[in-house]
Length: 290
Image 1 (spheres, rainbow, N blue to C red):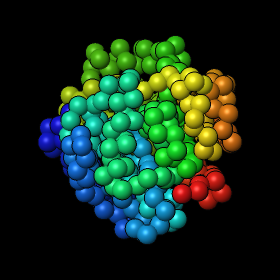
Image 2 (cartoon, one colour; image 1 turned 180 degrees about the vertical axis):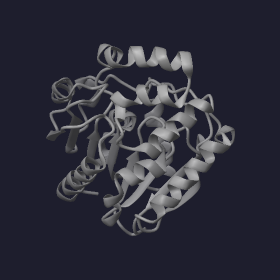
Image 3 (cartoon, one colour; image 1 turned 90 degrees about the horizontal axis):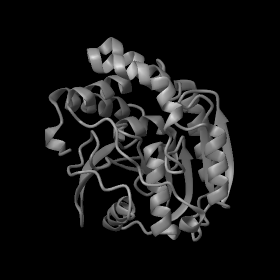
Image 4 (cartoon, rainbow, N blue to C red; image 1 turned 135 degrees about the vertical axis):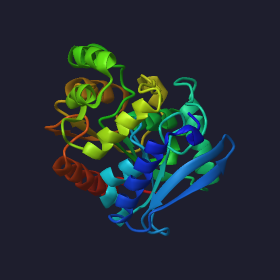
C-alpha cells in the first residue's frame, strides 16, 4: 500500500498519535530514509548520541503506536522505528514476500543507509518475525533481542479460529463499529481504544488486514545467531499459546536467556505495557553490547 493512498482519516489518526507520543518521549522526529529499495519512513526518539535500538512494530501497529508502547526505552536508547512497507504507515511500496529473507534484506538495506553496523532490537508481534528473519541473514548485526508476543515460530490456525470465526462472520455481514469491537475483543479487549480506532480505519481504507510474516524458522536457520534473546509472552494471546511459543523458541534458539509471561491479551493493558517496558529496558541494559 503506497503511503499516498492512506485515507484522510488514517492520516489524521497517524498525526494525532504522533502528536500524543511527542509529549511523552524526548526528541521525537520522523523522516524519510533513502535505501536501495526506496524511501522508508523512520520515526526516532531519544538522544541521538545514545546507543541505537531498532524497534519493529506489529501488524498495522505503526511507528507512533509502537513508540508509545516502548516509550521508556527512549530514556536510554536512540529508538529507530520504521514503518514496515505494505502496512498502514508512511513507507510506500508493497509488502516484501514472507520468504527468501526478503524482510531481512530490506532491514539490512535500512540499517546500511542509517550506517548502523550493530544494535539492540525489539520486535512486537509481526516485528518479532522480522527480527528472526534478520537473525538468519545477518546474525552478528543484533547485539540483543527482545521478542514481545512474537510471530515467526509457527503459524497459528486453530487458536485464533476458535475465538474469531463467529465475530468475523458478524463483522463481514454488518461491517460496523459494534461488530468490529466484537472482533477485536479477543485480541485487545478495551486495552487501547486509539489503536483499535486505527485498525478500524485501516479496514475502512481497504488495506488488507492480514499479511503473512516470515517464518516459521528452524534451528538450522538460526545456528549462527548467538546474541541473548528475551521472550515476553501473554497467557491469553489470541494467536500464540505461550507454552507452545516457548517450546518452539527453546528448540531453535539455545541463546534464549529469559522468558517472561504476563497475564493478559495479545495487546496488553496500559499497566502491563509499562511492566513490559521495564522488563525490556532491564534486559537491554544488562545484555546489549554494541
